[in-house]
Length: 388
Image (tube, rainbow, N blue to C red):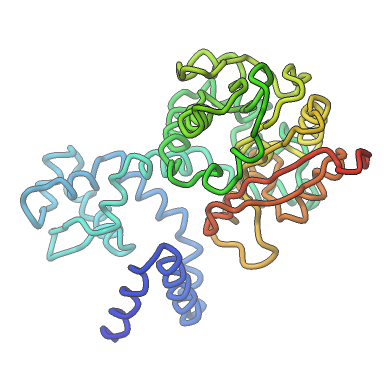
C-alpha cells in the first residue's frame, strides 16, 4: 500500500491539477468503502468538527502546537499556555486528533501536522470563523426555510435563510454593520483569499481592445470595486494605456479607497444610472453572483444604457461547467442561495441572463480552471438590435 501512496504523492506534487485529481480520487474511494454507520458519522458530525476546530482557533491550540520548540507538547504544557482546563483539553485534542487536525504522539502528547499548520494561517482562521459564526446558523435553518417556502428557488434577498437564522429583517450587509466582529472575519477572509497571480488580465487582450482609445474617455470603470485593488492592478500592468481609470463603489468603501495614482475614486450606487457614458471597459468582479435575478436585471440595464458601440462589459465571475462541479464551488453556490437569494451560473445561464436585457456574451476567457474563474466579454448585440 505504501508504494501506491508514494505514487499518488508524486502525482499530486506535479501540478495543482494533479493534486486536485488525487484528492478527489481518494475521497471517492473513501466514500465507496463506507458502511451505513460511517455515512451517519461523516454527515452527522460535520457540524461538530467545525465547532471543535473553532474552539481550537479560539484557544490558539493550533498555533501553540505549530510554534512549540519542544516536541511533543503535553496537555499540561498546552493548558499552561492557553489557560484551559487539562481534562477539557484532553477531550478536545483527542477529537482533533481523530479528525486529523493534530497528531497524537502518545498519552496526552501532541504535535502539529500539515493540517495543523494550515489552521494557523490567517486566511484559514478568518474563513473558518466566518463560516462557523455566520454561515453555520444558516445551514441549520435551511431545511425548515425550504420546507416553509415550498422548495422554490429564493428570489428575494430580504427573505432568505439568513433572515430566518438570525431572526432579522435586515439584508446581510446591513446586518454586518451591526456586527463588527463578524464583519471583520468576513473582510479578512475575502481580502486574504485573493490570489494576485490568478487574474483576468492574464488572458484578456486588453491592449488590442484598447488600442487608440481617446485619453479623455473612460477606459476602465471598475463598478463595485471595493477599495480599488483591481484598479491598482490594471494601472500597474498597463501604465501607458490612455483613458480614465475609475473606481466606483458606495461612499463607505470609497472613503477607504487606495490612493492609486491615475485612478479616480467615485461614489456610486450600482442601482442608479451609470454616470460614465461610452467607456471602453465596464468591469464587474464577483458582483452579479450576489444579486437576486431582478436586481441583476436592473443593474445590467443601467450599464447597458451607458454603453457605446465600442464598449465592453467584462464580467469576472465563476462560470460553472454543465457537469462535474467541484465541492468548493458548489458550496459557494449554496451559500449564495442561503444569504443572497442569488446563484452561480453555467455559461448557458450567463448567456440567458445577458440576453434577457439585450446584451450578447461574445466570449468567455477562463483564467483559473480549477475554480472556474473566468472573465466574460459582453457587448451590445452586433446587429444593433436589443432582444428585450
